[in-house]
Amino acid sequence: MVRLAIPNKGRIAAPIMELVEKSGLHLPESGSERRLITKTLDPHIEILFARPVDIPEYVATGAADLGITGHDMVVERGSDVRELLDLQLGKAAIVLAVREDSDISRLSQLAGAKVATEFPAITRNFFKVHNIAVNVVIVGGACEATPHLGIADAIVDLSSSGTTLKTNRLRILAPVLETSTRLIANRESLRTKKAKIDEILLALESVVRARGQCYLMMNVKRTSLDAVKKVLPGLSGPTVMDVASTEDLVAVHAVVNEERIYTLINALKRSGAKDILVMSIQRMIR
Image 1 (cartoon, rainbow, N blue to C red):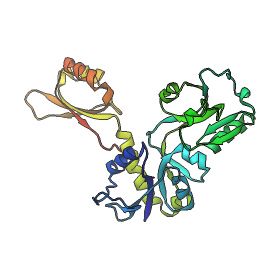
Image 2 (tube, one colour):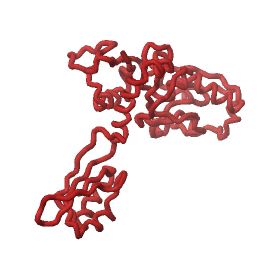
Image 3 (cartoon, rainbow, N blue to C red):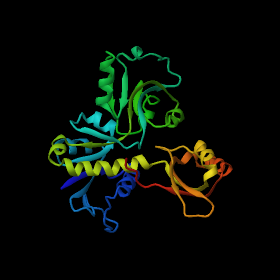
Image 4 (cartoon, rainbow, N blue to C red):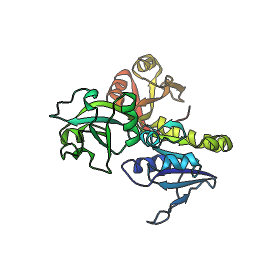
C-alpha cells in the first residue's frame, strides 16, 4: 500500500485534487463527508488528507509514502524528504517587505529590528546567512498589518502577485525563497515501494506535461505540405500520414501550445490546411 498525503484545505487544495483525478487516481463517490484516509480505485493506493504544513513531517516519518505540498512548507519544517516533481502549481515567493514610507533600503538596517512572519525557520535562516541579528515575531495570519500596528519593522511573507503587499502599502526589500507545489517522497519508501511510486510519479508527470498543450489534426494537400510545416510548431515535429482520398491528401497531427492556437489556425488555413480539429490533452507521456 502506498499512501499519498494531499492538502485538505487552502487555495491549492482544489487544483491538487483535480491533478490527482486527471492522473487516474480516482476517489470513489462517498457523499459529502470525506474521511481522513480515503481509498482510491487502485487498491494499492490511498489518499491521506492533511494540513499542508503537516505533510512534510508525515512523509519524513513514514506516516505517508508520498505527499503534495509547497516547497516552502518542506523548507520551513526542515523535513528529510526527497522532492520528486515540481507540479508547477501555486508558484509564489517568500519575500522580505517593509512599509512603503520606511527609510529602510538595505538589509543591514534591520539589525536588531522586529520581523513578523508565519515562516520563523525560513526567516531565521535568511538573516543568519546575511549575518544580521533580528527579533522574529511569529504570527498566525494578517502579517501585512503588523508594520502599521507597530508590532514589527518588517515582514517575511508569501506573495504570488505582489497585489496584497501594495494594497497594504508595503514594498519588497529582498526575495527570500521561490516556491511551488512539489511531490515529495519518504526516502525509505523510495527503496521499498519503488515500482508503485514510479507509477504514481509517471501518472502525475504526464498530467503536468500535458497542461497548456493541444492536439491538432488536419488534412493537407500534398502540394501544400511544406507550407504547412513551416507554420506548424510541435514537440518533435508534425506527424504526417497518407489519407485514402482522391484529392491526394495527407493527415498532419501535432502537439502545440494552446496559447498559439488562436493565431495558428488562420496561418494554417492560409497555408492550405483544412478539416482542422483542436483537442485537449489530458496526459502526455514521453
